[in-house]
Length: 580
Ligand SMILES: Nc1ncnc2c1ncn2[C@@H]1O[C@H](COP(=O)(O)OP(=O)(O)OP(=O)(O)O)[C@@H](O)[C@H]1O
Ligand SMILES: [Mg+2]
Image 1 (spheres, rainbow, N blue to C red):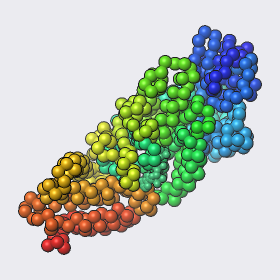
Image 2 (cartoon, rainbow, N blue to C red; image 1 turned 90 degrees about the vertical axis):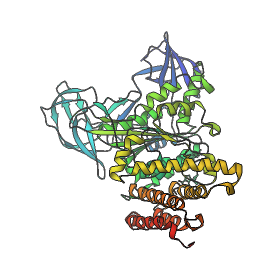
Image 3 (cartoon, rainbow, N blue to C red; image 1 turned 60 degrees about the horizontal axis):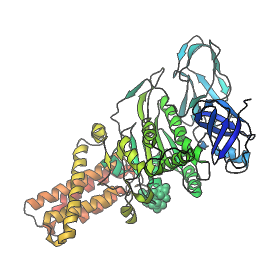
Image 4 (cartoon, rainbow, N blue to C red; image 1 turned 180 degrees about the vertical axis):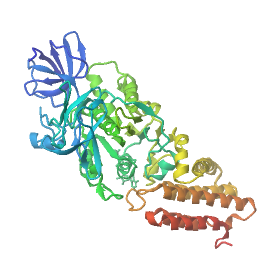
């Protein structure tokens, strides 16, 4: 028991004296033992950020340090879990507290009552070190969970046995007496160690044409998705959760409105992966915070999310980390900074906003894991941003752009026209495109990169032409220019638009995306050639191409090949249509 007492309470911040604690060390505050984290230490006074409602805390109540920082408990049973920002399962909190979040309730992340059948991969006498695979359990149907020696641990296994264990049970020991368990703890603010960062040429395949085609993200990369109110950020994150080519999904909801997260809690568990027919939840971990939860828990949630993601990466999994949205996290940071009376930077955000964001996004990586057998895994981060008033010049968007390799900028006017995903092809970018184009060339089509460039150039040309047409009127345009605008319209309306609600359009396979893009480009080239040969514009019929592309877009996977053939035929036949 320490002698430290509360000397001041200001919102979620509590000061206690005399107290010596390390930065980010956990503390139990007051007689109710509310969980908090030391965020400042000056002399013998510690400032503690409390994760729970501080109403009713009185001066003079005791404060204890926990001796550790906020850790994640990592082991089987994470998949399917719904946690708050500090790792407490919401369902159990509700049971224990009756309310959404009970006071001073410490609920373990991993259910201690649940037992797992453990199969050892090493025998007694084996020398092990951090990251080595001790054995496996079947976490969910078809998903094997590798039980790892905790990082920074080494020794000789003296005992290990197959059997049914809970995450608290001892399944073996090292020669120095260290118990081996199914789960271990890791401080969430510290990146998990890896053997090596690897270069990747593999894309994070999203199943969304506009991203895969125009603004691809490399696996292990990071992407910012800024978009104003209602522009489709959440639908994008949910589509990725369902359709992106990833083994594991970690979804962090930092909601603004209470009911927004209720939506996530009802909608996310209902998502079904059409390829397996199984709930997306079976391979997901959901971390949710609403604005009515304490601000400090919201600040912690993205670190919990990335730590869980790194843990599965270390097992050799390809993990997608989705955050909706980082703005809410940044606001939590701002609120806490203000309470600490720190000198504010731009728009009131703390001056360290950019460095925090950069440290966070750096945790996206393709990595060779520590330990044996050799494993490679990845964490790809897709972070939505909700800039106030849709203004992308604000600090969170700007700071994110400097550290992510791609941006999918959502445009309010496209969303108003119900052009979804409302991705603005003028201002979005990807620095990964060159890196991943060989993969697309190999898996989709040799001329992937050429088609991509042709599309980008065509869309740029269309924009120039639109500007010209708005000045001088569309009649002043040349035949070829008018044709370019017509083709561009089909590309925008059929190729780049994608319905999240259509059974076969919601996910576009790489084969379909390539077939649609190459047929569209073929139509554009054929038409321009015909015009160059003097064939009158009136004879160029794009209706057939548009129709064929729409049918291809809505085709189930097993009909893509047939419909792709028809789209190519329509594109080649563009100058021999009914107008002859
Ligand atoms: N790909 C899509 N296909 C069809 N409709 C879409 C698509 N994307 C978004 N929408 C429509 O736009 C609406 C708003 O999308 P969403 O909730 O994802 O926006 P948001 O940016 O997350 O909003 P907020 O700022 O409130 O968080 C959806 O309810 C849906 O009707
Ligand atoms: Mg949203």
